[in-house]
Image 1: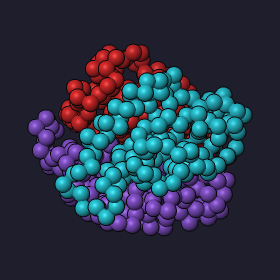
Image 2: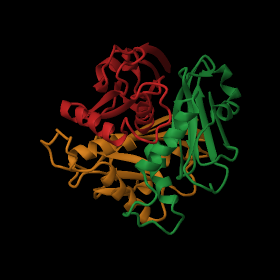
Image 3: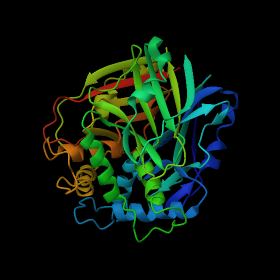
Image 4: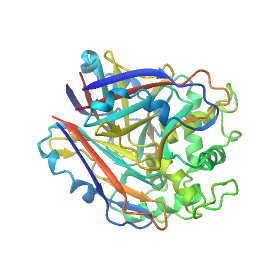
Length: 140
Length: 140
Length: 140
């Protein structure tokens, strides 16, 4: 059984945003999948997807602060300065975190751990558009 | 052909631990898979999975030292301080390295490169429990 | 429908190299796949694969400079010094970026975003060999 859907997320501000609900809302079709995988792919190069702690918002805020320190906006070696100053760091953060996730499906549900949620990490101050996602489900 | 199994790893100390043997021990079923993929998913947010050099233990020790420098425990910008000081860095390391792997299966075996082994990267000093893994195999 | 192929990339210099064309050249078979996924796996531990901006070469140069700053060659804590000085940083960069990608297939094509290209990130000065890749396609 294959299922694929492309959709856009609601507008999200810069930072590490929980999108578990938005993803699950697109996954009605997995209720009948006993065993499988769900692949989530983001069609952009200045945001990213990751899975991490979903209960305490200070964790997500610390992610934003740490990535701003680890990939500073004013790095003296950046030559790609034709775009806004947040653009080049956004590209780098996107590749460090990655733009796709694969999650097991067990008995009709995403088999996420108790504390795990899905983040859309928005690295631009003014994202060019609602971010586009393709979900591909394969299972039996 | 689908196969899925959830199990717990043995207790592992903080650091970058080789778990190729432990993973392969759960994969008897792939002997009959000519072409496929094996997905390995960790249900936690303070450890991670990666593939890297498997022969020289100093490589794994250098990983531990580098990640401690790149994601320092005492970062002045951390606000998530309700847990132990190793908690917030553990969350960040987990997302940088990622919590799932997909490995091709060829002629009944994981198609790892000569030098590649699977690491469970334990970022907590006192991990809350034996780490839980789900393996999903799909192939023909 | 399953398809798997192992091949070697042409020689690539240290840095972040666009290989979208080289990957697509191995994917004739996906023309008949309506829905599926393409998994790309690199069998090494000192290079990596990522997806990022494909039009402006200064982006790829800034990636190289940023990773050299974030994972410095002369880190005083490295003990794995039996190989060349670029070896240990190459291992770490490989795990930060990752060595595999999964891309959705839609109507016979890789469903990459407008700006997305595939990079082979070569972290060694003198790579030991043409880098080996396995592509696994699954779909219907």
